[in-house]
Image 1 (cartoon, rainbow, N blue to C red):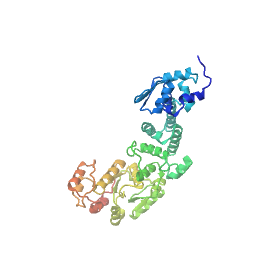
Image 2: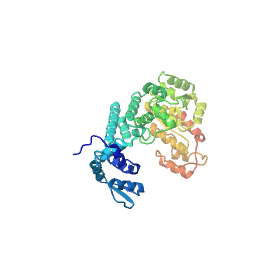
Image 3: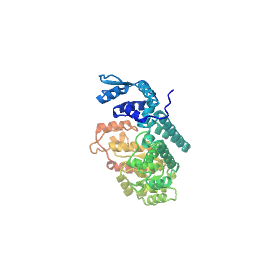
Image 4: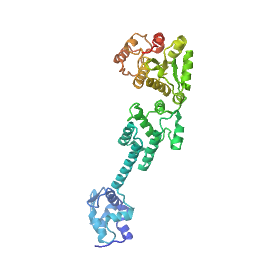
Length: 423
């Protein structure tokens, strides 16, 4: 057998190294990278004249015409060996264009590295049943792979995310401070960071807020998601509004609630206060706590009822993080939450959120209450379902008018004056 201790580079360049045979070398390289041998044929459609001439010169063929150019790879391999140029076509491709990387082997190595990264994340979160669902989603959707350039970066991202999750819940800690403490970078949990995406996905699963497999929330819902883990993001924005809530503890939020309840005055609590000084609302267990949409109801109750008003919380339109945190505290304490809002489609949407998230029930927010209320402005927007009372949506569509809380203040105030006993 002929031995080829070296490659005759000069002759190889002359035989196979020109640009007119680059397509052939590329086809061979692709086969080798896929783990296939240099057998069969390589075909080029619509070759240029110089490409056809180069193949005819390489193989010693007579000139031919046609729309395709076919090269038997085994014949080229034998030619190179027989001419003593190199050990064959595979060797020639490496000598001319550089090393060939086995794509299958590389994919297998990458897959093993990703499996190791996720196995490490599973071990880090083994105490949390929701974590395996979160990690399974990352595998199924390929999210972690899209966020990382390679398995090493992916492992680093997963490690950072599990480190953050291990530090939760926080107690009113700012997001920047959390990032600096856990990840040594105060901006590591900014909205545009990859690790933030992974952590928020995990929090969706942990809290079962919305559809965890869906898109990440933005704006207020993102702030709320952080708040469920005790992390502050915009902790002074849109504080919660309440009247007549009496707390049983001695912390800052408790003292604020009691002081204002004693005076019959509304109180505002920021998300910062609610997370850093969570009130003890255990005294409201099995007590009816009313929830309204508009601050005009709170103002009227304070003006007309004062200390005689039943406990009242106002969501002020789409509920912000602070009021949702307060409602979550009340629901956890066992309070009986009862909601009323505007009879329009925005009010219906808000009601659905309050009912679903905080196990609240309707307060004069049903079809009979709507039918007996004075007509307001024309009803606008797209109809929405009212699963707590399917007839309500049908009546609203048929009647075609909205009813705002300010139109029925007398009825709501009468309830607040007389329905404040334990249920």
